[in-house]
Image: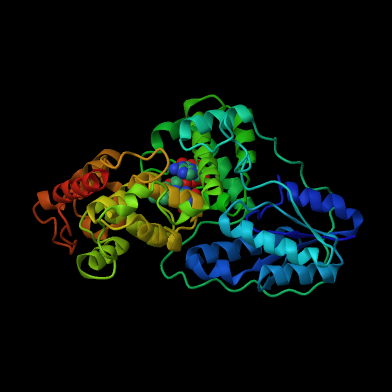
Length: 458
Ligand code: FAD
């Protein structure tokens, strides 16, 4: 009988164990590929990720001869209806590890069971499924380095085989048009989809030798920018890890560091799997009791708006926040600096920043984003100690030494040469083109943050 392949965060054809499982069960009867436009997920997604998703669905469908069936509604209704229409005995999925995905899948599983249809989970969006790597006592890891060691010792499967040549798509049921992209204003996205992901990976592989040093430089194209491709499963991390191991960079410093970054992604998914509450709540509850500014009144509200719009008066911070609005992506170093600035210089809670990031990032991912925020806020797993406060000026001077990154995103500072772009206050005419004054004094706010922290520790 035909089977249903319900796609979610696995929008590719290669290295796709759930697709192979669906094809193998279906044999000559064919696989119906389905995507559900779930209002519960689309509502909060924001225009960047919505556009990415719609483009990725179009790309996927094109690569499967237009066979993708798209329907809107509650997954427990839509998936059951489609399984009935096709007469499927099983619906195949890649397991979802996030809190919403897990509870949704349980609901769908129940609804399918009423018809005697099974939900079959094969693989996850990770090289090793979240929840698999545990400490000797069976408990979850809370610190990255030992997790990384245990993850490496555990090992992960090789990439899955290519889809069979005789794979047939079922075309018997109706679907909707993939909706038009939301208005992105001035934001522009790179190419989307599996082919684009593999092209990006190939181009980046040639630069892996420099990754170890270039990855800290937001003024250079030194990182892979694969994050959104990974988020939508256009490429699986297993494919990247296998290519790395087989290629010339398996043991170079650049290759090793890149592998470690992929393990961070796995680690945060594991943390979320064990602690679903940490997507919203403080991982370390102690910091919930700290005094924070109100985001809805007075300075707090004004500061939050200035931060979101990139007009804090700190060039490196503003460049990052404007890059977010222009590209839906921000360099990792800059994510850390702008996050630290929101929490420690403006005394606003990390969740406010995490929400803004999730709205605009094309790679917005609950586990990597919210734990990245908690890490910077000092409240997460192996947290950077709270008292280590990033200096937004010296960070800029160190990692964007020629000021090129700032000038790219902040036109009001383009008249300042070299690293002068990081300190308009020190240069005659620095403010001549409308760049705003600093909204707070970093030195003062750093002391204030430390005092607030000391108050919750005592
Ligand atoms: P590369 O340097 O090329 O790294 C390769 C891959 O490794 C990335 O694509 C990503 O999948 C993974 N990776 C790298 N660094 C990290 C990290 N620190 N944590 C988890 N995975 C990592 N990453 C997201 O994918 N989605 C998010 O929503 C997100 N939000 C973040 C918020 C904050 C406050 C911080 C500090 C970090 C966040 N990150 C997030 C992690 C990191 O900034 C991005 O993964 C990275 O910048 C993506 O660019 P890249 O693909 O060029 O990375």
